[in-house]
Length: 367
Image (tube, rainbow, N blue to C red; front, side, top):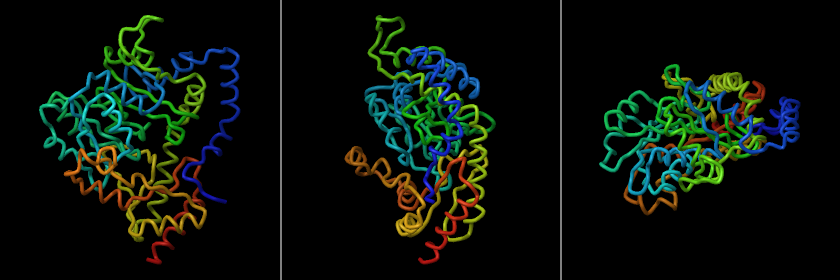
């Protein structure tokens, strides 16, 4: 039997009865938009993250975009972020007319290197947007201190880190705003697109709700140009059911990651590093390997999925290439050339992990 990157079908079978019951309740109520499940989800996640407000939106990309709007970042401003992440991080900055300013990453954690940020600050810098990549929290204490010193907004990209914590506090709760994605493959994922912004700032929370609902505080009264960015009731049902198990899911991911590391350490590949400053929730289990393409081909031949996140750093993407033609971020570039992510999901069994590792090590030995 093949081993996928994530087994959403298998997970669904364990949740089927609760999900179908929840869907039927929504169908019976015919309340699909801005309904009670969305409100309940917002309250539950705000409580879990230890913040006053959680605002559900239509996607993780929208969460970043609307967070930047709520922070009043716009034309001519600069936002410092990582070049080694999904395009949505920089894309959202570009949406508001600001300029992404890339800073190289830490070679161990793949996260924004705090020691490199200050040199990138200019009079136009308005915010820092660290990405908690692959589920490992960025090193937030020095970033928070830097933002306070330079009076910059801190907007956390938590698309891959739901349930991860740093010094006992949830990711997303350290910054002015924290942005989550509920894309199906995430640690907490729905069955479509979905996202959320969390904050302790009352004013920004109000602005986020207005922006997400066509710029409206009151029906048919529109104070700003807004967006149609609302999580629907069916997605909220799925998320509330999965949310009850998120800590167990993340514990199982950590167990699986440690099983991988036990089998792979010192065997010709470099397992991911946990820096010990926070709790890594392993949205991805990402190794470094020479002969990556040959290893990936060997895994595919054995019926084992793998993925490269991300093969092209953002400053080398066509859309940004001209702007950053003279820029080089060697750590991100080296990571892009060597990373390989292995199957990772809570339901992954030890036998499956053994099979993945055996195929990977056989391919490595042939090199």
